[in-house]
Amino acid sequence: MKKAVFSIVLPCCLFLQLLLVPVGAKPQPDQKTDPSGIKDKFAMVKNLFDIARYQWYDLYEKGVMVKAGEAGKLIDQAKALTDQGKPADAEKLLDQANELLKVYDKNVLPLYNASNTIRNPNLSKIRNSTIDDYKARDYYGLLKGDIAIGFVGKGSDGNVYEIMPLINYHGTGGVIEPVAFEIMKSDEFENLHMVIIKKKPVIMLETDSSMVFYAEDNGNYQLYSVSKIKGKTVVWIEGAGKDLDGVDVYFNVLMQANMTYWYNQNLPDNVLYPGTSFSGIEEIGEAEGTITIGGKTATFKHAMGESENLFNGPNPELTTNTIGYRKQMTTYGNEWWMPFHTDQIDGQMCIIGASRDFAIQYQGKYIVPTEVTITPLVANKSFKVFARTSVGDLDMTVQVQTMELFYYECGCTVTGTFNGIPLTNGYSCLEKTPIGGMDGVATIDAMGKGLVKASDVMARLKAAYPPPLLGSDKIGPEK
Image (cartoon, rainbow, N blue to C red):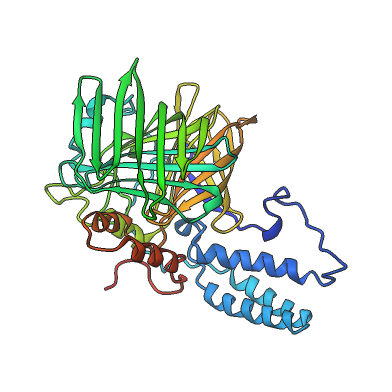
C-alpha cells in the first residue's frame, strides 16, 4: 500500500490574475503605468499574507506561517513608500516580506494521534446507508449532532446559491429547538438569509422507509423528509419565513444521493482533535429546486445535494468527545471539510486538524486516494485539490462563491478533470473553521433561546473575521 502524502504549494502567480490566467503563466506588467512592476509584486505578496491571515493552507502539513505578522508590517510600509513615489525602496521591503512568508514552523502545533484513513484504507465496513442510520440516536457511542442538507447550485438568475437547512440534536439524545435554515447567494458575499423557528420539530411520520420532520412558529416553517426509494436516499425539504432582516424567503429542494461517504471508513476510534471524533455519513448527489428571496425566484437543475447524518455528541461513558467539537475546531483549526459533486464523480475531502480522510465515488466504486495536495490560489476565494487514485488523478479547482460566518461555510463551484475527463456541473460545500473563530452551534442555540440578539451576533461575526493572525505562540488549549 502506498503511503499517503499530503503537501501544499504556495502560488507564485499574481493575486489579480489568478482567476484569469492558467497557474504558472507569467503575467505581463503594464509598462506604461507600472514600469517597475511594483503593483504586481505588491498584489502577489499581499495575497501570500492573506493566505496566512485567513489560514488558507494546510497548517498540519506545512506548519504555521509564523513570520506573517512581521511580513504584514513590511507590506504596509511598502504601500506607503509606493504612495510616496519610491517604488525601488518599496520593492526591497516586499522582497523581505516575501521571504518571511516562506517561513513555516511545525513546532507550534500540538502533536496527537489523529486518524489517517488514506494511509491504510480499510473498506470492510463501507456500505449503503439505511433509514435506521437516520433514526439512530447514537453511533459508536457518539450521540447524534444533526440531520442537515447542503445544497449548492447556479440558479436561473446566474447567481450561485447555497442552502443549509438543519434538524438539530447537538448531542442531547433527541431533537431540540431551534430549527434554522440559511440561504446565501453569490452577489451577497458574507451575507445570509437566516430563518430561525423557535419550536422543537415534530416527527410527523416515521415508516420503514422514511422520516418526516416539521416545525412551525409565527409563520416560519420547515418540512424536512428523508426517504429510501429503490435503495437510494432521497431528501425533500421545503421552508419559508421572514429572515432576520424581515425579508420573505422560500425554498423547495430535492436531492438524490449517489454516494454514501462514511467518516473514518465506518470504523470506530476516529480522532479529529484531542477528545473529539465524528461518526456517521455524508450522502452526496444531484439536486434541483427553487429559491425565492424578496419575491425574486431562481430555479435550479444539476445542482449538488449533500445529506448529513452526523454523530459528534459526547460519548455517554465519556471516553471520547469529552470536549465539544466546535470548541476544538476553533482551538486547533486546519479544517478542510468539503463534499463535492459533478456529473462524473462524487466525493468528500475531510482534512481536520491533523486527521486525514478522503473518498471518491466513480461508476459505483468507492475510491480512497493515495496522495492529496491542497494548493491555495486566492486567499479566502480559491484553491486547487490534487488527488492521486488507482483509477486516475483528480485535479480540481475550487472557487468560493458564497460564504456564511456561523459555520464558516462556503458554497463553491468546481472545475477540473478526473482521469483526464473534464468535470461538469461541479459544486461543493466547504467548511473552513479557523483557529480563533466563533462556535456557531452554541451561538445559534443561544439565538433560538433569545439569549443574544441576532443583530449583535451578525455585527460581531463580521468584525471578528478573519481572526487574529497566527504567530509563534503554541496552538492548542491555554495551559
